[in-house]
Image (cartoon, rainbow, N blue to C red; front, side, top):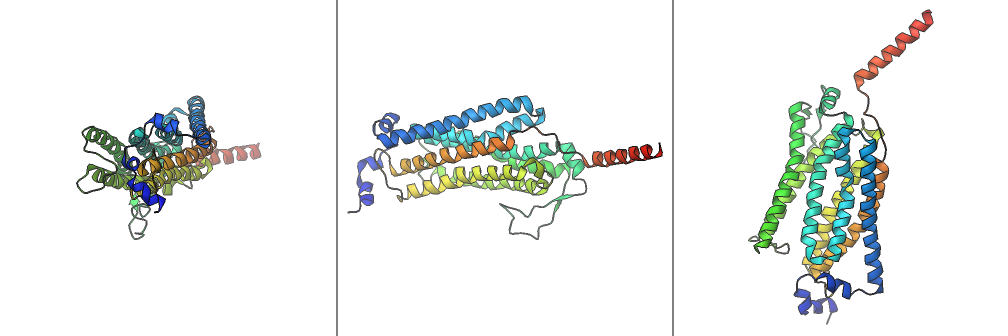
Length: 327
């Protein structure tokens, strides 16, 4: 009989996630080294983030401090939560919810960051006067190039902010709702039936996520050239990479685990082992992203100059040259 099929009949493969003591007791030499190295990576990620927060607090202008700290904290927070879930498998639902809720806030904060890099709402509207947003972009309308551009006004800017803010707010509300239902025995991550609360909550979160990512993509397409010198393109790439790894990669591994594709290995059930694999990958990936993010954000820069200021400065220089020539 195939061993992977045999594990399906093992009572330990149908039990709940193991306790922490069970995880520690079954570790061999390789497991001890692996868990130790991953824990060290997660710890270093958080220490790098704390050091970065101190640098940002001292060097970065006040209007950018908060948003930069939120954005740069995405990878370290996910790495830390993954490390906690790795050591305490029964807390995985809560650690995953914490990471997802934090990243929902980061989506909104990244949109605000792009606006603040231009100088804030007023400066952005002044620079973008008589221009328009291209809304035929992903993840909603990348296949609809016929959509008309939307004029850039204070109202359209507010709608973009609201589109991302709703995800941060509703994700927090649905997380709290999930925990409340879980305490009542009405929420189970593995229950994908139409009668289960999990499938409806996760589908709603998926829709809210797509809606929230759209305004960020619209704003990025508009400001990417103006903010190229501030390394906005690689910053956006890191933001997208965190999204893909923490959401899509985790979802794929969890689906494989629930289908039994990932065999159980007592004391880990199939689903618990899938969570473990996802957490270990995320720790390594977020560690690397933390180091790259530190390089991208660890610099003090002035706001990009206003177009009118550039014109006035040019006129002043030309006038001064003429006065010198006459003298």
